[in-house]
Image (cartoon, rainbow, N blue to C red; front, side, top):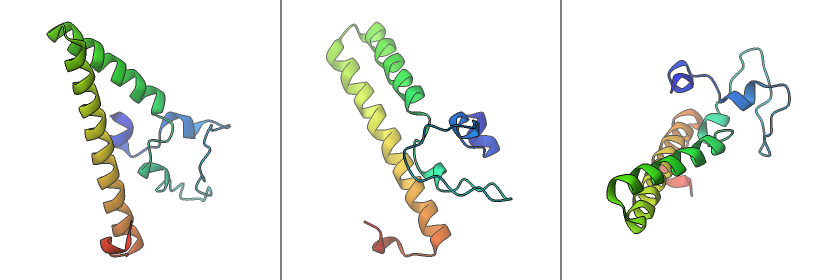
Length: 103
């Protein structure tokens, strides 16, 4: 959350040897990480841990594995959908491309 508020990239980007398999932004004197902010780049282990914790908490509350799986899956879908829409809106705003031209 602190990284989101301050606008800094995920912790993996700040290291000398990032584990990114996607195209990294070329470093400039501005240090613009706009491309990296549209993906879950570098925080997948944290999101997996969040999914595991969500499953366990819901399982402790309801004592039902099916409900726990359903709630965890819906929470994952919601997070992915929100990130996709925010990334799409960011791309439309910064690239000056109409939304209907994006797939």
